[in-house]
Image 1: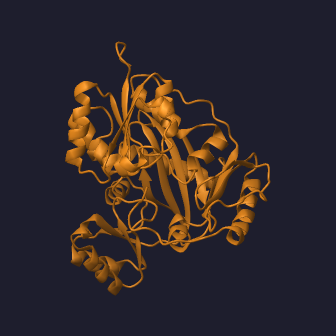
Image 2: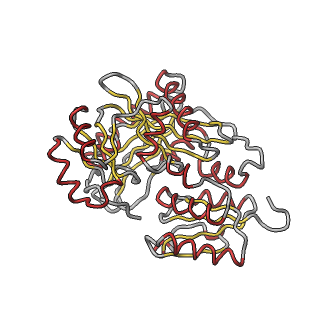
Length: 401
């Protein structure tokens, strides 16, 4: 860290998240700046840890963002710029390159934002991926649908959580969707739908080495719960099991192949029902959402936001040491609720370590020393949630804060 002035970090986020990242930066002596959208100016940020707050309109053009941050840099040096949310990553990478600030550049960030780029690179490194094709050349699309049996998924290249995805059952269904997309077609890919169980691995990487990773199994696949409704769950996998060991190896190979130097990642994989093999779905250089970070902290004591902040501040100049981790088990259950503030007081098991208090949501983070106990509670609570709380709504075409 510079000795003559505080190390200054600019956090950019269009969504309300990353509070622990901000607190950690401040606790390490940094000067912390926050740039967020105007409607989140008074959100639940840790203002006691933020030196200055700036706001921007939603969907501010990149050129205007460069102007604004460059203007701020006239009066105060900026040492690091961090996107707290996935949807700000490309703009932040462009800012880093324009201002010559260390961190992930545009080429590397593509592998962690663009589903086409990450699939192509993963396949080049020998990792299994579902068959896919860029939505670009119509002859190639026709050949793909002739060769690869349906159904298929029409996926935006730079979205998350199933946003904007369409399931295509017959080839004639594709063309009307492409007509609707118009000039946006090339920002999509078409991928074979592979039925299977979905897993995720959340990691900390320091100087190209994965120094921490936890493997988890979703209940219903996230695509299913987001599009068809239902209860979302995920849980720690037995660490000495074959599934966890295989996932850890694929995850290490993937992160090495994509060229990540340091940071946190959330990667998703699918175990196909047909052949029992693991296929890569997607990866993001961010902390996983849906309270996954809380699950990991409950099981291990490792807070991914905190470790990410330590990596960013050190940026390879200070040796990174992962804190000692526990080896408990944890899980989360979450659903949309019919009630604005659902009453969960009838759920009294001692394994509940955190009750999610979010408008029109019900959920818990659970912790135990037993994988079987976590699985039993998630199964039992899922059935009860359907009766007590469950509500559904259409998946949005684009993200909302």
